[in-house]
Amino acid sequence: MIRFASLGSGSKGNATLIESGVKESDTRILLDCGFSTKEVESRLAKLDRTAESITAIVITHEHSDHIIGVGRLARKYKIPVWLTHGTWDNSKDTDFPETHFINSHEDFEIDDIFLHPFPVPHDAREPCQFVFSDGVSKLGIATDLGSITPHVIEQLDNVDGLLLECNYDSHMLHNGAYPQKLKQRVSGNRGHLDNKQSVQLLQSLKVDKLKHIIGMHVSEKNNTEDYAIEALCDGLNCEAGAVSLASQVDGFAWRELG
Image (cartoon, rainbow, N blue to C red; front, side, top):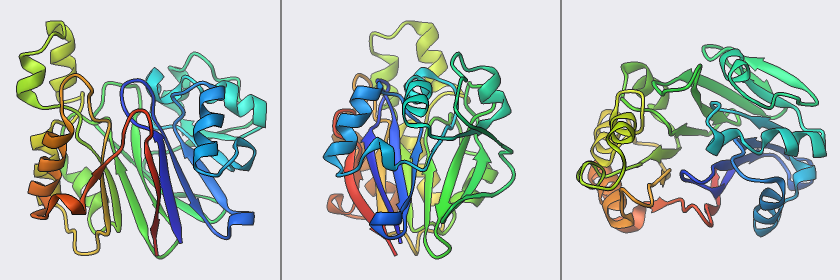
């Protein structure tokens, strides 16, 4: 059984917990760590977990809202870290107790969890996202990408759960207070997905097995919860109660697949 929860999602910090197995002997992976060690400890406690129980930290890319807390947490609790060579080369703190390098085109295993990485178009050195599996169910994660490619669609087809970026509303971004250069970066092909792109991606996927869909990385300044939920519903042709969002403050509570 795959279980997953979010410690928080947004421009102020991101971290997702994925686990499989019996609680006393789980494989527990922290995907990204954009929070301080103290904050991670506090947010894990709300999910009835501890930092000591984390099996591994896996990093998607080197932007600070995804990696700033990795080094300190890994050193304090002696947690091994998995990342691409490009992410490692462009990270400021790589003094990890144990480092494993990922090829973003090759699957690998961490104890009971199978990880399928795939490259995404984002303005980082070698960014990737993942599909996690226990051999039965699949959880796809797709945030921090600026455009939809056939390869991304292929990787996310027929997943059982999907955490999908709904970063911004195009009208709000382009009429908002961000400097023009930042607007261009966010909305560029290597920036973030807007609500309409999330709809397009969902409509391109085979979703017959989909049990959970959660909107991620929702901008506090350039989007609204209503807009993001509407986009997910449009993409799946479903009612609002069938979808949910991760928040910056609380993430989301435990969900299960299997």
